[in-house]
Length: 137
Image (cartoon, rainbow, N blue to C red):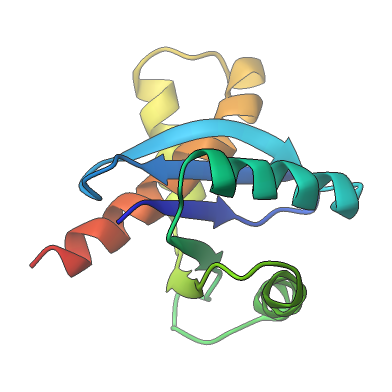
């Protein structure tokens, strides 16, 4: 099963795709969050071209497990997506994915000013990989 993950952001949406076997997550270039109609258009192209069967959206949670204002934004985003796309959507805990992504990119020597464009896709890939591992057994 091919899965596409979205790391929701107000400026950029981090995107990752699983391989055809649903085992490995790969970062994809981000899609600008605005204008939303353009984001949706690009997302639909990705879904179709990659034969995606499920969308995974990162749900931000506080460290104590509670939901804050960012979670409300993501819930609203998912509600709009469900009205526009027929592909099933699942939300998944995304705690610390951006922190992990920044650390990984730093560890491989990517300079801070270059990380900004890569961190969203990497965070989406970390999110997606955790999901893939949870369903594989």
